[in-house]
Length: 174
Length: 100
Image 1 (cartoon, one colour):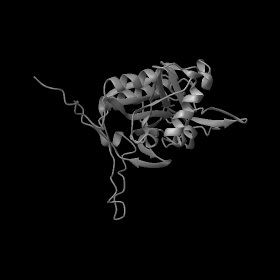
Image 2 (tube, chains in turn yellow, red):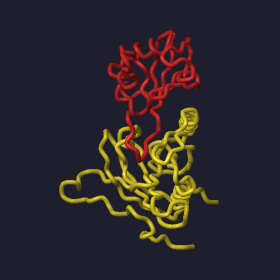
Image 3 (spheres, rainbow over the protein chains, first blue to last red):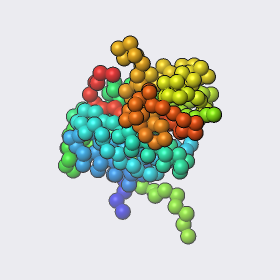
Image 4 (cartoon, rainbow over the protein chains, first blue to last red):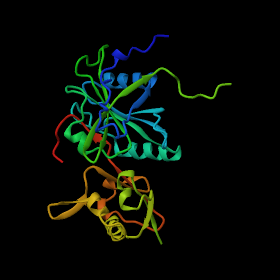
């Protein structure tokens, strides 16, 4: 099995922890490689339109575990929106499973993987990791993407490190 | 006599952290006024002024018994006792700077 190559993934610049910021809680997005690959594949497949979706996880766990790619109802290279009926179905399923959206992701297809003013204004899940994938360099083709994660709370954006792990989730072993 | 209204995480600051609250009203507009009476500030987050008339905000979805109210009459959607109302902010964004 191939070892993870951290240099594969851009956006791994760790959050600065210096004197002033050291007391602040530093968030990290930990995502296993299967989920990472699925998100990247979705972004590449939908390029040049923006791709979007979530990774749900057990409420309060901060562990992303169930990938749900969503249809971009806007079908646009510069905008995304979950279809309202599918959005309700998604949330009802999460409520039934005691899950919450741990990751909310979308792609930028011609610009960097940084939240736009629109992204910031419409970010309504203060507990979620907002993942941005930029496919501007390689589009639908093989090749690295920018993959970065942020907290967006009250209009304030904080980038956080992304750790890709190769360990499968705790699966009760026999 | 009550209609259960499911409140999204982002708006629970108005409901003391409650995930769902009860409210009354024969229409969605009346229900939102009743919500506002008990949870001041909530209405402003759901409704905006459009040409002198209140309308649901573009990026707020409200469902009555699983139907998006945009397809059932908007704020005039009629309600009955026992109906289930869900409020969910849109999950949306994108690289463009859109007019909001």
